[in-house]
Length: 119
Image (cartoon, rainbow, N blue to C red; front, side, top):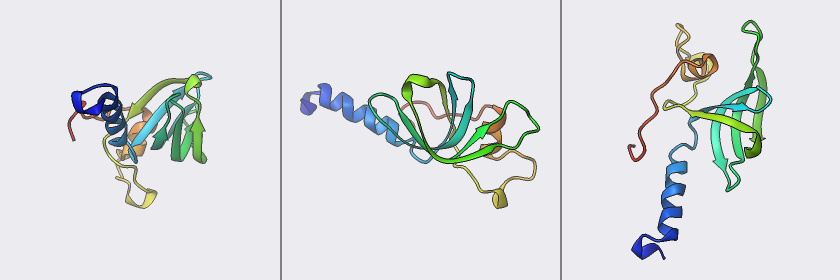
């Protein structure tokens, strides 16, 4: 039971950990090699992830990202998930140097991710 730190308390703690990532940019590598970048919306017990404002990053560096919008990525196909600390920005507010969170997620440059428990 939750009052003595049992399973309900552990479940609540896991849910709170996931909630802190809602709206944050994520970069997901799937088993067929595709990379999707978008905002984390939610996930379920099977680690299926729903993302919004999603783009697919192409292997060819010259190719424009493919706009996907809202998608569900099946957990069984997820190889790697990266969560970024800064919110995504629109094209109008991007840093002209190309260092917006979306640009960094697309290029794979690291962005500091907060340690567990920090806000």
